[in-house]
Length: 125
Figure 1 (cartoon, rainbow, N blue to C red):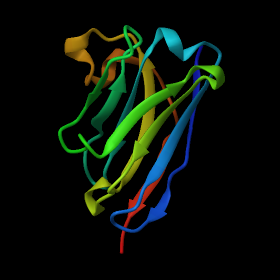
Figure 2: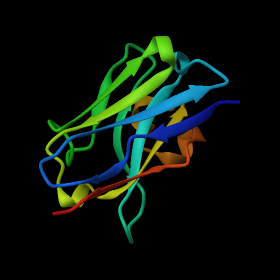
Figure 3: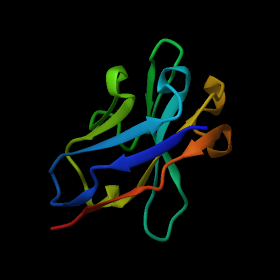
Figure 4: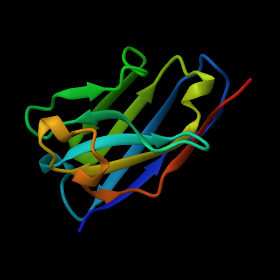
């Protein structure tokens, strides 16, 4: 059983940066694909970024490409989401999830076994 805990959310102004953390216990994240999803207010949850266990390749939603970066610190079993150039439309609850989806299903939420509780990111002037 893997437990995931997100942190690092908050209220920031447009153009600011935040770094979200997702720390795991119960198993090493090294054997899982770890993905960030988000749920904007009143909308469905959506894919943001993923880091595959196989080769460490990363994938991003078009809406965040070039602004967000996903990385891993193996020593502390933590996945990060560095978010730069934040926009109002990035406002959402951000969730990390771990699973073993095939590449074509990497954005499919049902492919992920473990989820964190979410952390709120609000971008507002």
